Figure (cartoon, rainbow, N blue to C red):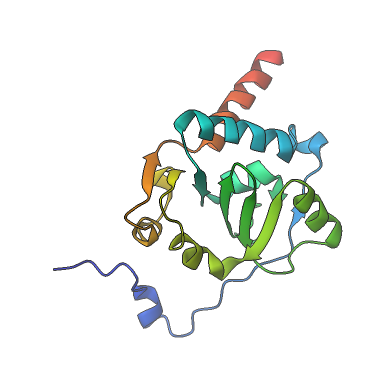
Length: 177
């Protein structure tokens, strides 16, 4: 038989399921985050270039929060924002709730090359990627994401650069103290 990956079984039986709620979010100052978004993106793009990737798909909320210095309360007891990120050499598309950032934070994101997109536009966006080399960590993305990618996409399955960079930064700080 065929696997039906677009069917949400929980939706079939969870009739009073509450909708996803995108709470207000904010950006951390660099004095708290250690590195600015611009520097973090530079390092991610260096790793993308080393892997020969055109696009990096990032769906793990902790990595997105770290990379863009975002904080929120969309997940109980965890300061993350419900979001997906698409990183290219020129821009970042951040698919998240509309209107969750104050104007000043939206401006800071824009200055760092981050374009805000509606959360629900992520999967339709994926199906429009063609002929690209896409870096992602298969162990940290959904089956649906893998199925949405066109057959002419080359997947580069590696650990998320953010994870590698975070580990390196933490080791460096530990050695300094």
